[in-house]
Amino acid sequence: MKILANDGISKSGETALKNAGFEILEHRVAQDHLANFINENKVNVLLVRSATKVRKDLIDACPSLKIVGRGGIGMDNIDVEYAIEKGLYVINTPTASSKSVAELVFGHFFSLARFLHESNRLMPLEGETHFNAMKKSFNNAYELSGKTLGVIGFGSIGQEVVKIGISLGMKIKVLTRKPKTEILKLEFFDGQNLSFEITSTNNSDEFLRNTDFISINTPKTTEYIIDTPQFEKMKDGVYIVNTARGGVLNEVALLDFIENGKVAGAALDVFETEPNPELILLMNSNLSLSPHIGGNTIDAQEKIGIELAEQIIKINQTIL
Image (cartoon, rainbow, N blue to C red; front, side, top):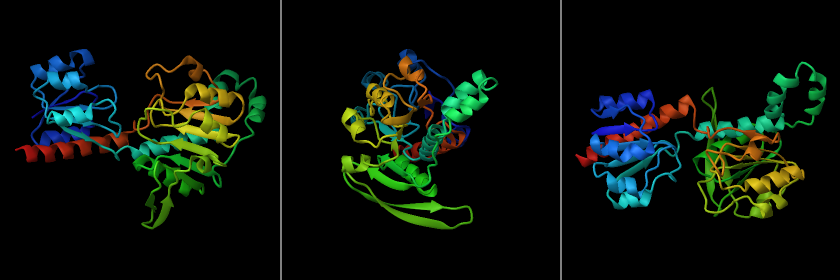
């Protein structure tokens, strides 16, 4: 079978597939030329991340495709149900990048709580001339320990966010559409582990009340999860991080509530107009920003490559 990893695959994943007898095509094909390339090379497996789209027209145009794989958890760039109807196997790696995304959430939380996002911008410009003034302006910082962490979504990423919060000594709230209980195990360097039973709520008002830090970790939605009514119910001085998808949070309303002081600071790794974020967001000093890099660590990519390889090898054995 021929595999096109159009958005890349880790070396370990590539090695596993080659050792199993698969041919890997080392190309990066533009979306407009993808169908022709697949047909000309009789590609059987198309692996993508977030850049390449696998829509109905591509599926219809490429009869040689047997498997479509998404490196990561989100499947919104693939017409999954249509692909399955057409007899294709559709796979993803829902847990491989969870730790990486969760660590980015707290990278942003720490940055916001200690003004690192702003001081990193200003130090090269004013550090020599206004050192003491900047030091004074950044003294209203906070520890995360003892604060209340609110996590929206309780999938694999949400659970990893909760575990980090627990390890920092934070109080935990989780919001889901339906209440659910999960047992989360924290493992330590010396082999010890502790388990925590966490039950989510579907009461949005209670969840938002007195919550200091909010992390959004949901799949793509058709409407805002956080909009003006939700902002109004939040505690004054709340911090918010969105590493989920653009469109789960109303960015215009966010700027309004930053301006009036309700939101002390926010971080966006994803954007409504991605890959062209609004300039007004990019220039706001109360925002900590990153270019959709939640799962972009060497560790996550290695896990993703291996998981994709294992699934493809298993499916191939089933087909044969």
